[in-house]
Image 1 (tube, rainbow, N blue to C red):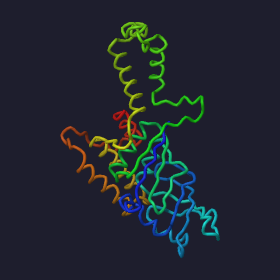
Image 2: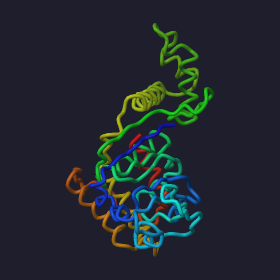
Image 3: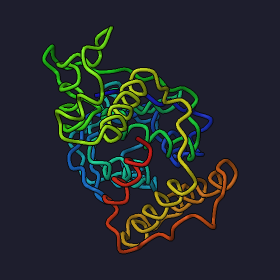
Image 4: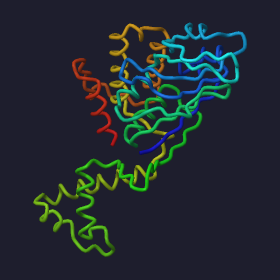
Length: 289
């Protein structure tokens, strides 16, 4: 599992659709999820409001829907605990990946927005690519998490792990090798070319996980357009998403796709509106692996 921290300066928050909230609050801290499914993301926040503002002022922010005031403090420094529904295409996409989560430490203050998410390297790369198209972060940092000494979380699938261990146990990665790839293929009853291709992919995934940077993750034009179309489908099907700021962010991503990514309209398959969004994301994740 990896953790990636994205940061945008306060003067760039308008570009990611959350600028208005800083006119009401000095600081907002993400504490936890209350509910997290596509189209319905509810979070517990601590709001430190600007002098003269009240929680009711938050109801004017398009990207937030105030659902419940858990605790309203009379002491400004303590902050107010409020449950809000998030109306923004990126958290919605984050929920759809089914494996990446915002974590405590994410915050919005006078310096800017710090958005910290954890998950597998592959799914984080997908989100990094989308965030870059929305508004390239000013800073990105990433680290690998080891939750316990026995943590066996891996970027490899179960089948890839089994094949890698099979090859390792038989000395394929020893120097010098104790077994040739032809012998591995014979023991597994598979073609040499098949084993070679699988091991090459495994090695590439491991190298990418160790050394890749999240600072310049780029999606292809096809991948980016398909993701945007899933966002638009969500917007069309969800009344709460039919707001100017949500549509504006999608249009910004579209503009950046046109400006930054090579177009190949002849070879780009048409979007199948009947395909489930989770299946679309799964396919894209496989493409960028």
